[in-house]
Length: 174
Image 1 (tube, helix red, strand yellow):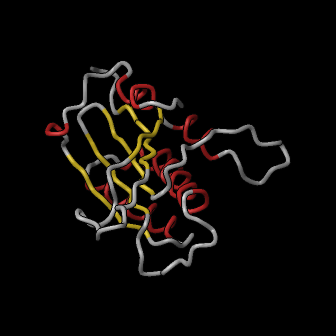
Image 2: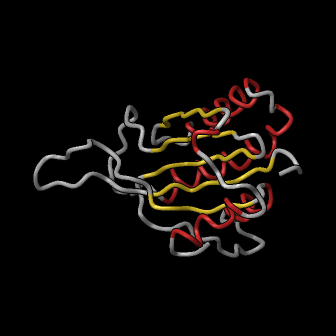
């Protein structure tokens, strides 16, 4: 994806009417701890949410994408040398539904942009964003608003991060 907001959000707008946040017919958020077991929790949350929205038939593709986005956030967006408090929830999964689309968004504290790379055939990892691109109708990312307290203490800054999202079309009609 690109390096500026218009490029990063471009696929979210392709071939579909503009998103009006007030027109969302459903949204759900799940906070995830900094543990790989959180991927399973993200899939369970996704399954329950899609069932509530009567979109269970989309679960397989959406769950695969959610798993990859959450895994990438845990693997690449959290500093390895930082202590991981099991009670801390630095990653959030957002599911948003409109009449013609579903968006899965994963928010993490890293400002580094996601990079899709070519993994060697023998590699056991490195294909996450390729899978996201293959199973969704588009993906991208954008910087997120500040994380943490609205008014951080003097001398400190609220954490900023990014949101990596994937778009699924729900119907062919626009």
